[in-house]
Image 1 (cartoon, rainbow, N blue to C red):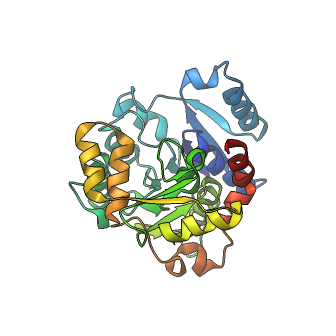
Image 2: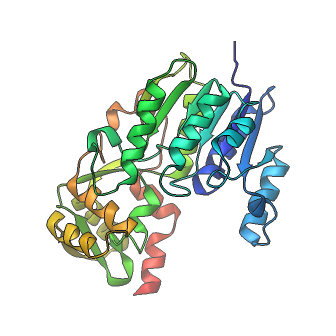
Image 3: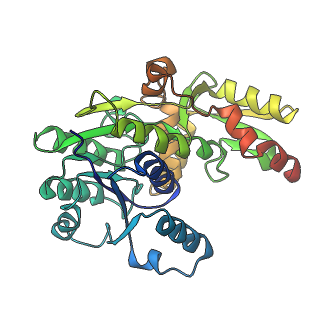
Length: 313
């Protein structure tokens, strides 16, 4: 019997909106309800983009639940979570250290049937404790907490990097303005990437999968490629020859030492070290289920990366 008929999504950013759209498509017109937890300032925002998202959610019948993950107590969050069967956290590293553990404890204390923590990223266990990105240790603490109990089922969805992040100017891997691709660690290092839309769609499939998926880590992937393959793809689609440089682990660690609180420099070191940031596409949930996903080349075409590159030249 289906007992996940009350679903709460935490956050409505890039991933949260993708998750909510897919859940609504999957649940309608069944006797299921989808809600989203938003800060009051987001619900009442005058920002046009946020207003559009809120209006879309209301039009789709998504319940808007007021809450503040960073500032409310664990007990207050548990009181909010208690009336839901499944909680899916799409918050990112909101609020800094301690918040992911607080949310997980609140889900357990609320007695929700199933919890999907914010782990939509790399494989933290392969990376291990003590990495350059100190927030990753808390992700392992969350896993230990979930495994230490049996009342609430949990599912962790490992997705790799968001595909769009490869092209984030501040991250610096694909630097279209300078016609450059910078490899993290080496050209042979690989990275797994998945679009936010695919993460939302695949997580929705996992939620409703038969047989039921519980108490396990599930890997998905839109694409797994080396930085060499990334540069070759950019060259082919743009009809150009990008400049190619390698940012070594030692170099990136020196840069991090100069700015030890810089989150992007922390991420660069982790990806340059190359552990737990890529996995074989054939072993993923989407490959095993035959679910089509968006690879790098398709994402570049869909997001007009080549035309934007021409504008920066």
